[in-house]
Length: 354
Image 1 (tube, rainbow, N blue to C red):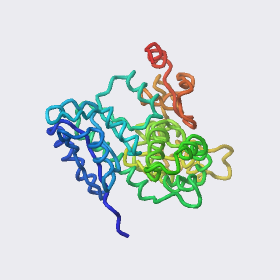
Image 2 (image 1 turned 60 degrees about the vertical axis):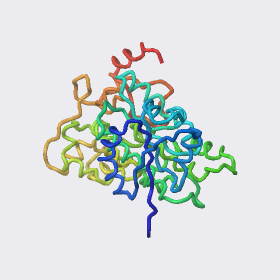
Image 3 (image 1 turned 90 degrees about the vertical axis):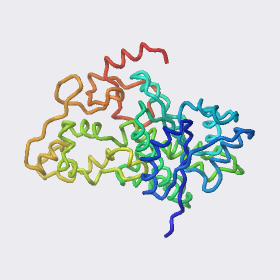
Image 4 (image 1 turned 180 degrees about the horizontal axis):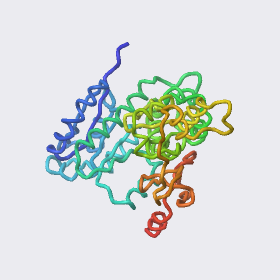
């Protein structure tokens, strides 16, 4: 089957910076049959028309990558292209948007986490163009993968999402808990005659997977969160032989290039599969690995220094236990059951204005 080429559109006002990103990003996009294009404003044209035409002309951009500061565009044109205009245009035509800017410390991290419902994917950067390129490529590959899932069929949105994320049977009820509320209502709210209605599922579901499922450990967990849940020391979990025990739980859906993730229900299933008749309770992940590898495996350690964790601190990005952590307020998404903030860090950040 022939796969149509995709296009990624980048708004970067510094030609030198674009060249550095392009050197890494273009080959990575080529691997998923996509090309990279830099937007160049033209004098005497409407900024809104210029931006919308650049995003929507065929093939419509699978991802818009936006530099936070576009002031240098003024050197080339008086068209008035700004980040606010680009963000508005992308949202208007349902084009996925990825922005990059310098991080603002731990308080900035917290503010970014609390904005998970916004229509964009932020990339923090300190001028590391290679990292911007790699993250942009991973995000683009995720949206392109969703595009290539085809239209929603007779099974409806839920079936389409289950197929897209390749959810194991044990995780389907958890995924459904997410999808059958806000996502369904959002897609139904679009007017039947909306010109970009066919792009809405890909963009909406893409944001949901990246900003919700992957960013907040719960249904899916990253490496550190997985190690904490399995009661395995984070460094020990990096051992390929240890990870092999949980290979069946590995996430392989859209945005899996961003980092390694595992289905929480899949981790439980992998442990259950190694149980023996004499076992009275479900094996911990550490016990499961020790049974397979026939060697001792160090336990997970809470950020406070003691053995035992189980959860993941969203700010320090380290294992933490329930006693030494706080579940943030109502802004956490549904299902983020492994996501917490270490108590002293929570108290420190709570003193900052929202």
